[in-house]
Length: 293
Image (cartoon, rainbow, N blue to C red):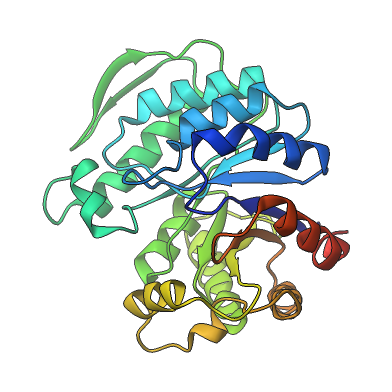
């Protein structure tokens, strides 16, 4: 399996820092840049940031880690992805999730009460058809289109990954996606998640490539910051934060090695606190790049 490690910028990275960050990542030969869905704050909107970063680079891959799909019309999303794939072939890495991590932002991606999961499933089916068929007619519970076309489709099939760690989310990955990007899972838990996804894919008559499983990992330079520990506690009150995030580069290296042993091969590393990007990149290249193959 090809082990690849990309970078997600910290929550304090706004438009004024984005240009220099993209230039540094490209010059350093980093595999990929991942943009989070955070509406309230300084981070760029992920599709806007992807477009700008792809236009300014020639080798850097850019992904969403993760963008919310329910609440966005899948035909418009298909058009965005096809356009980006035409302008930057093989460098667009879409990953979608059910809803924003921040509860305050969930109303910005509306879905009928109790039907968000069903809406997600239907959106994925329509999105996939729009990216693989010249003309689509579709009548569902949430979306209806007739003779819809987005023009030229991607020259090669586009992989669509999903996030999520709930049992229903893992089944959805197996049924509908090409890969999985998890977060806040121990190496042992992530290995079990991988098996659950593969079982769901097999039950659906599908197969997900072995190197299409990854994890997002926050890395601190001097322990796990209180803010990150609180965020982890709100999502995983049953877990030790030190098992879900790295408090040092040495721990990050050990955790990635454990994830690889469990079958994962793609990683998105992000700073656990505000640190200068140049310092983060120096440490990243020294400590983690040797783990790529």
